[in-house]
Image (cartoon, rainbow, N blue to C red; front, side, top):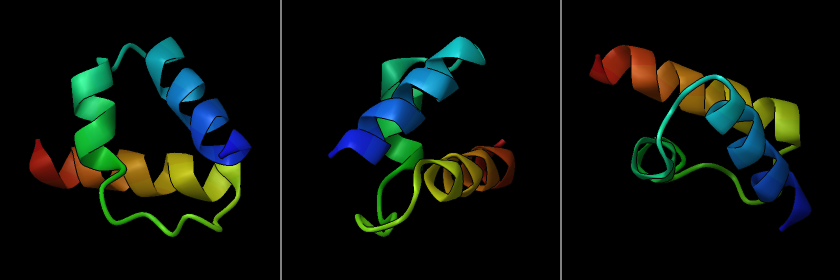
Length: 49
């Protein structure tokens, strides 16, 4: 969806790789907003790191 694509683009701007982003967005609510998806992914990356 559009929100997911925009979230991915935003995360890539922050320097994350597509592989990291895909892993971080696993389980995200597909109906979430772009902002919610970015927050979800950042939380997942921080917890993983």
